[in-house]
View 1 (tube, helix red, strand yellow):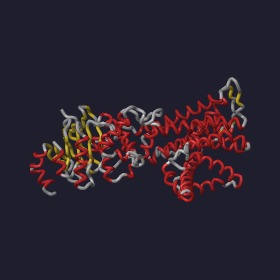
View 2 (cartoon, rainbow over the protein chains, first blue to last red; view 1 turned 60 degrees about the vertical axis):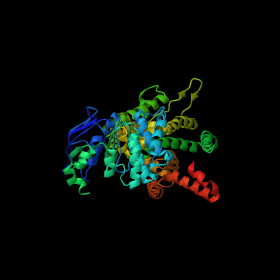
View 3 (tube, each protein chain N blue to C red; view 1 turned 30 degrees about the vertical axis):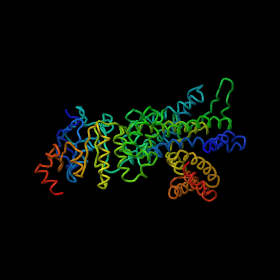
View 4 (cartoon, each protein chain N blue to C red; view 1 turned 180 degrees about the vertical axis):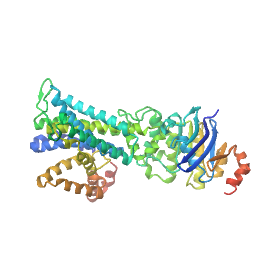
Length: 246
Length: 326
């Protein structure tokens, strides 16, 4: 049984075909890395899975429910969350409010004109808990736009966690980090996503092979190979297409 | 204490106003309060939610016309019944129009609101059997019977106090709105509409609620506008009335709660002063608007804050940082 299943998912932007029929199956609890050269369609795949874009064809199943035509917010409410490759918080709001936005959404306090954003029990406690997990608790009152780049990356992860998702998609969470920062970030990601299903886009091969238990190689909008890290590492097509040229 | 004191002074000043100034200024201040609510409602839409509407006069005018028409045609209709009816009709139309255009964004949203405004403006001109077209509609303010006393609403000072309480309460309710969960959600709409969706928020629903609420508030302001002048003309629902609220909001300071309140104060007094001197007062209003937008984008509130900060640095160097934080 899989938590997420993609069947022949295609996506084109007018004449530009980005996804040419992706088949993918992710099991509950899996730590699934997606790799591939620039332009392979990794971020587009995330956008199609999370509802930013509607697929041009194919079927997406989440927890055995077809969500192909669901809106992004409906998918999130089913337990699917994501981060962005380029920092994308509410820049004018402080760190605490950025994270609480997801926590209170999960609790159903989205549009009330009678209650404050922290009115429900545990909202603030859970927000602090997430901030502590990613090491942002000392910056709770700092506006997101005043955070350093690295801390904005941490906020991306915190926001993805904030709706307590079963499936979490992280789009290059370590983009723009040094080797040391990357190691720290991966350690945090590994810890905070424990018990959840993780799909991660990552360029650093050391990270991929240490964190992931399944690796999918995407190339030119199709899955080249998907399997255990060692299997993928040994695959001749992958060596030719991707790893060899690195 | 430092937060409470200015508020107490403001309340005392507003309540005591009729004892210190003549009827002329009491009347002008009544108008200021009405336009402050109109500005506050628009600021929630544009300054907080980043929804640029060119049709806000539609709700203001609808509130005004509903009040006038209802008082002319429903005999024995009470003061507050007319106000509630006007607010309710503006809220309902806000919901219906919001529902039709909630998927439109940016320029197309702005143009559609303009189109709806033009439609209602045309209706006000053409449906002469209820609106009297260009002649306008006059009305009599009904007296308010409180049981133990009767409020003589045609009296300038009495009407000022009624406006201060009712419209003032609506302004306070608008402030409360900004502190609620929905208030924060509205700011999220401004800051990053895309990200909201991936946290489980429907941006369409957020826009619809905001559009409906601000429509209702503008309708309430419009109702008091009609009662204030005891008259409604097509001016109330014209594009010029939309421009007026844009001016009030931008001159006062968009995105800050007190901005349009200052904006309304300056607009009403300036309009009164300029229109005494020249018939071309809109020209000077326009000039002021351009200068403000170009040189002080934060509006009057920004200007006042900068002056206070400058004064603190100049005269009380030690307290400047504390002042910045509060």
